[in-house]
Image 1 (cartoon, one colour):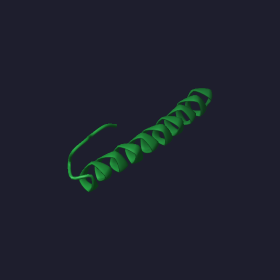
Image 2 (image 1 turned 180 degrees about the vertical axis):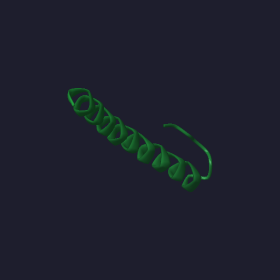
Image 3 (image 1 turned 90 degrees about the vertical axis):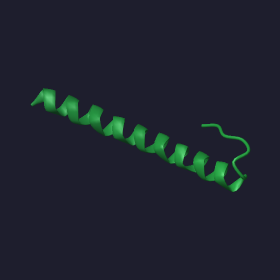
Length: 42
């Protein structure tokens, strides 16, 4: 049972981090489009 406790905790932290990064990248792409495709940065 200890393995699954550890695994699930790491998986949850990973998906929270990935979700935040994905939202940040989505916002960067939207700003790139709004700014007329002039400057892009993550």
